[in-house]
Length: 519
Image: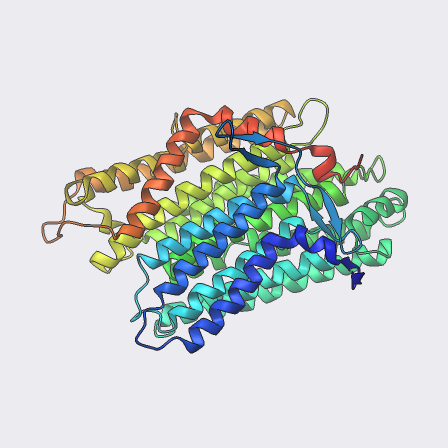
């Protein structure tokens, strides 16, 4: 028996997504029937439970099993399946990224429980269960093997993000940010859809594998249209990634959004869009040679490399003069989008096959150091009611252990040795060197040096500035848990980077998971 091309037996492959769908529906019903006097924090804890269950399904699909007799984990073969007429992929590519997004959203939800005030967000219940559809959208994006499924996931993530950004209904800055985000996001979505229409017109299909086969056979006849389709989609996805020069929305939206949603946009939304671009480029354009005068695939990789370089330079230079912490992280995020684009631009081939592991390792490091830094900021914001970097003044004297954690997170963001951020950048640089992209490596190193200035400026504030009127700071228990989880993982990534890298390479297969070669 089939359900519109989906067998009932195939629903088990969608267990992670279905868990979140059912949970979001149940949470919305609970919110409606729950007495107003009962705290909506309960919905936040229930959201975390649903995320943990979904993560358990993803871990099972990745082939990780717990051996009770030896009390240890064993790594088996990951589940690989194609659903809905090959439009949806269950594989290690999507599984690894889904697990990361689930962990990130769980930490962001926990962070929200410790920092969101009802006076700031009147409908706290809606806030918690809107995070789940946004997460589902990101999970769909990393598993899509069809333009339609890809666009559905993208829009589910985008539309719920627009709502979450505007959750502070009584805050004029939040309303302005939501308006800018939805207008510019709508334009970006239209560009992506327009680019998709050209690919469909050329190939007669929305399936990425079939599009690739069609482009490889007809590239000489439709070279101009292929370039137009790619540039339209790159512009639209560049907006979602917040890569320069498509970054103008990011500072205002990051500043106007509730702090946990800023973390969600910086990590889950950005990560899902870059991962989508990763699969799209390699699955759709790999091997599309074009002509000698116009080598399409090489031009596409070069364009992404240029976009990465512009983002790294623009993001770090504009961050230098920022005094608002969330705007500073927005420009830092633009630069980090550039770093994450480098593994896509570094051509996969005989001399370089670690694109995905380089990308994923840095995304893992970026996730934890960003969420941790914003959790520290949420504590300061709630205590001093300021978003300016001066709020960090004298943090060492007000909360010494939190200051230590923030130093670790900032050093990792800057790429200081023996942190997760350092090894993430180092692996990306080595990959770019293997493909002889020396100019891109030089820009990456130079941009990282610039970043040291504003990150160390924050550290200087914490240790060499003092606020006489400031009182001691005590993070709430949920915030403290988030801060220390992120700090510890950031340190572990720095001390044992090869463990994570080897695990990614053990689970992931470039041919089976990215190029969709079966057998």
